[in-house]
Image (cartoon, rainbow, N blue to C red; front, side, top):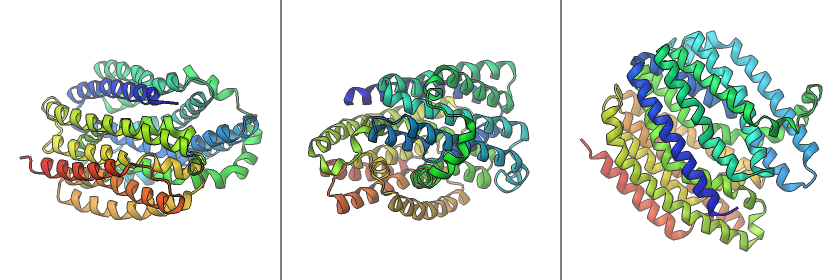
Length: 430
């Protein structure tokens, strides 16, 4: 594991995101604002549910493979437990649509789009599990590229073709489901090689549920934050603004790609990191490269956001500013390093859960206030700030308990100054 994996991860992620951004721009010109908003609300709900149904399946398998050379039986039981949980969760989602339609979606998400969207959930979880195994026992670089780029090479053309032939939210959702099925079919052998008979899955779930929940709840909550934001904007500001906010997130997320690649690359180095100074230096070296790439990503968003605002139809005012301030929070938070992954892999999940839930409640309330005022820039600023504050708190906790400094002091100082400067600058735009 070295910086090459980070560069490949960043390059493949940026390439894939550019591809999807191009397809999305095309969709905004084909679909009506209401159809596009409905499609994105359904897709975001499905994405939000993925970590809640899989819980800590991916992280648990990562830990088992790292800890035990003879990991096959334990991995098999963990997979069985995760898939059983997915089946139960999927069944619940299929029967609660009438309630969710009224309470969560404000009756703005049709049944057909909803059911197609949730169909993606089990396929996405199975793909993520297969990719995690591939990353640990096969080629990390190839797994990163498949995760970040190859999937999107399927999604983008399918979205464009179905949009041209049948410009509706249903057709776009159908294209996403078909692309996910094809992605899973390509790498399913990484998963099936470890699978046990389904009759063992219930006992596996009883055995592993506590561990899955302790590992997965923080991941699920954090992963759902931005998806919750889309649902919040949909509920308060309407489906059309929800579609615009989702585009803001899609563009701003590119600034977090270096940190995402870093966390995947550094995962095998994090277990018992406090006892290994040599690995600490390797992680710090990777972190410096990640920060420099993150700064370059922010510069890219500065350039692309106004151009995208010009070509994207029906995104409304404040799109460029919102993308810039959100990207600043996502990118500059990378200065603290893979703190969440470190705590989970080393079994310190209680602090993560408490911190995430406390900050989640605070920032959801603040975002609601911003949404009520009609400020999409305000919601985006708070979204980026959540990540920056969360990672800073967790980094401080790691230093107090393990004396491991996940981010270099000069990086933290530069990031804080840069983040404040970007928010003030973008906030002054007219």
